[in-house]
Structures are given as structure tokens and as C-alpha cells.
Length: 403
Image (cartoon, rainbow, N blue to C red; front, top):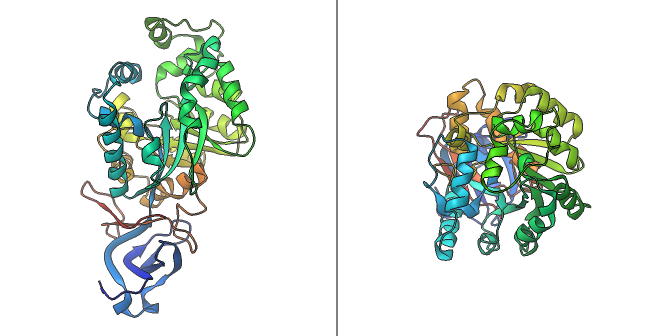
């Protein structure tokens, strides 16, 4: 690398992958001092002495569409493979910790994401713990202040009071965003859905909701069976007798949500092809976040990726939290998907990991693809450009941070 570079950095790689346009062999991405892309072309257009040259594949920074940064202090606390309801019990019973410990873990987790090439995060917040870190603006955040009332209409107002501060107290600048959102179909009453919809009425936002993460969730809405009623009874709540719809859980959610917003359904391990079609008929602003390592950690199950792809679903990738994952890395999520579904090409996974996530969060004005005028961050993958196969040892190196 030439140390006598001007303010413009010209970064060359074996293959430049813009995502929204064809890959460029021996490509060059030129960025200004702020990281904004000013040109994308081939090495033959440049004096080799002006180039920073790297082996591998150059891509935009990753978009992590689903994380729980505030749970970072619970890494390793929950055992693997216990199922969702047991996992939730662990989180609820062992979440308490010293404030300094929580803040230190949040800081460390954010640094881990930055080092892994992540430039933006869709982050779930029930509390205000992550606000000081987010206001440093090291990453671009879309904060989903999440509410739940155990399907109890009489607790809806209290839920908004309890979880509203995570929304109200967060000041968003430099393109960050925030929404008040429902936790999951099995934990939000019609009254709370209505209150959230009223609060979010107006400009288009992204609304995130955990969806069909366990078979019990669908059973609850199909016929009232499964383990969720007894789960609630154990903590002193009785589910309303008219909960069953005779349809899967996602239909209950759609019944109460606003199709005009971008809707990010998260996890979807129990989502059937008919559910995907119903959601696409309900709104043309639907996105689907997959968090494969967390799904394996909690329930040893992955979504039916073939059904999603055949239905032209806009997939995105998330990490979930360190409570349900071994690390916070979109590259590691891509490796897991490709290891267990090797028929899905790298180019498809990259779309999920970048531009689809940016679109889902409303961040594609600057992030998600290598295009002139954007400042998406630049990440180098040590991949063979002729094979584009992810291996366990494949690494991501952040060359240019987003701004």
C-alpha cells in the first residue's frame, strides 16, 4: 500500500461486489475522507501506485437487522437447545445485573459488531440501558422499543408506560431511527396492538415483531393448545378464552398491525409457505429476518429457506443477542446458512446481509450497496473470487467505516 495517498482512497480487490450491480473483477472503489463513494471502476483505469490493493472480495458493510444489545451481559447464561419458553424463563429470572456490568457488556458487544464489519443494527430495547452507547453514533441504529402485556388487554396501558421510556428517551441523530413495536403475537393483546399503532401513526416506519419462533405459538392461535397457556399460568396470567383464531400466529399479528409500515418478521422458524403468501398479500412492505445461529441455539431449528426463496421473500439477517448466540457476526450467520443449505449461493446471502437489511430499516439511502454517493462502509472478505464459498476460517476485515 502506498503511504503517500491523497485524501481519496482507491481500494482495489480481486473482486468488487457492489450487490445491486454485477461483480467487478480487479475492481476499485474510490472513497473520500468521509467514506463516501466517489467512483467504482476497474484497476486498468488507475496508476497502480495510487491503489491500496487487497486479495479477496470487497463488499459493503453488513446490516444486522435483529439484535438485543441490552442483553449482552448474559452471554453463556442460557443453556442451548432448551426451547423458546425455557429460554425466556432463563432471561427473565437471570437478567438482573450491576449497571456497570451491563454498560460494559453493551460497549464490548458494539465493538465486536464493528470489528465484524457491521455498520447498522436493528436493535430491540425494553429498557434504556443502550441509550448512552447509541448516542455515541459508532453504528447506525434502528431501535425497536418493544412492548408486551402477556395477551392481557387490562395491562396494555401499563406496558406502554413500562417500556415507552426506551423509545421516548432515545434521541436519534445522523439517520438513526426508532419505533414502538410489539414483542410477538403470543405476548401482545389487541389493546396493546391498538395503542402501538396509534403511537406510530403517520410517517412510514419499520415495525419489528418476533414471529413463529416455536410450534407452541402456532398451536395457541390454531386451537388454544401447546405450552404457552401453562407458561403464562405459571407466572400468574390467564390467557383470554377467545385467543384461538383457527389460523397460525402470523394472522393474529397481521390482523392488528398497519400494512403501510415496513414490517420485519423475525425468526420465522415455524412459518409455512401459506403464511408467507398471506403476509405478502397483506402488505408489499414485508421483510423476513433470519437469525440462524440463535435458532439453533434455542430450538435446534432453521426456517424453510426454500419456501421463502420460492415466494420471493425479502430476507434479511440478524444475530439476535449474546444470550442466544456465540458471537455477533453477520458473516458467521451466513456461514451457518451456507453450511446447512449449501445450495443457497453466496450472492443471495450477500443480498440478505446488506441491501435487503438496509431497505428493511429504511437505511438504503447510504448503506447496503456499493454505489456512488453512498457511504456504506467497505468490508474485505478473504474469499476465493472464483469459488465464492464461505469456509469456517473465512474472515471479514473492515477497511472503511461508515459515516
